[in-house]
Image 1 (tube, rainbow, N blue to C red):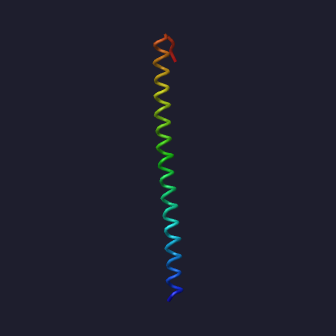
Image 2: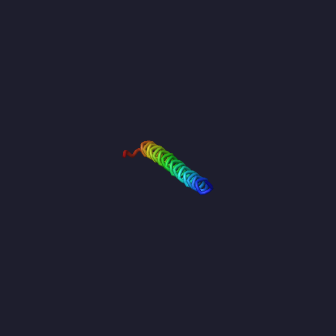
Image 3: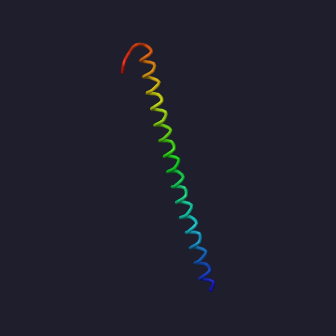
Length: 61
């Protein structure tokens, strides 16, 4: 009986560790995805800004 309870506790701890590891992976993936989207948005705005600047100075890209 005590052995079964001890095994259940070990199993619960392993399950909690796996669950938290999965959550950490999911959060880091979401953060990376958000960072990538921000980078793309920033790059497209920078390109647009450069194009406007070039056009205002009389250069065509």
